[in-house]
Length: 356
Image (cartoon, rainbow, N blue to C red; front, top):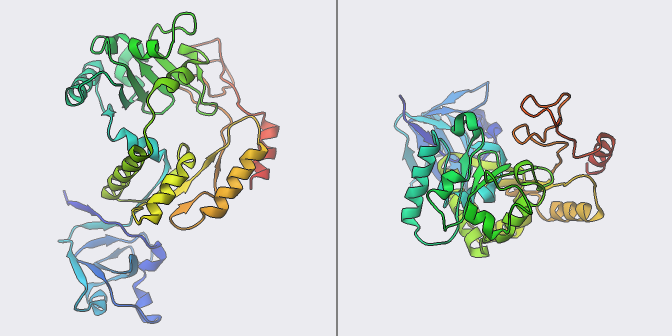
């Protein structure tokens, strides 16, 4: 199978027209990517052989003889060896700082079953000994077979005296061991810690279900928060990972608006290598004056090609896995609930129009 090369291409696809070479002055290329199979995304010119780049932007795409007319003695030529070159990708739903922090934690994505999960936890603990928190993410419901949800006993077997908190792949469910629950003060008097699962409504950011209303808040209060420098280091690592996988722009669906100062600091330091479209999460059930002030202040300050905050995220209900998505009929595996709406529909539409 052809080896694929993912290269950052930061200009709009409209710039991929080789015809531009004849439409006016074109600067000399800083870089030329040659001997490649370039997919442009332009239906009138879907494939090309080479790319010319000047000052970080694509200035022409076309056949090699045409592109090499833009070459000078100082132009760097990257030999692609006939491999595929693609435009940069845009991830349209991401929680970037959370994902960046997860790069340094236990990765449970793709684990086959409980035994696989436990082995990954052992490997992590051997490299990170001590009594501090073990944090991770990526497990999904299918990993537990007929149990559907995880049980704290699988974590207690490995870590009776070290707190563990593992986020599900969807970001709405957490799996804690007995030590983590104890540190949070969760007992049979405050919640039902029988299985160690915490379900969080995506809109209210409160727990429901297995550990009742206060559980997520209680655990969140005792999990150590990253320092500013740790967050900045995580963002640098996250951008590096994104660049290596061909991402040039991401759309944040929550969790990053609160850290705009960090993104701005990286941009001012010339360390931002990824474009961000960052949403403000409008928590139901009201649009408050302070929400509008935050939205407008950020929009005026951050509205360019690198950081754009001209978007608001609103949600009318939850997710199916935690039984918080609003359904017409009761859930087949829990006839006691049909889920719920977080907003009154009429109020939701009025507020939506007001934020436009």
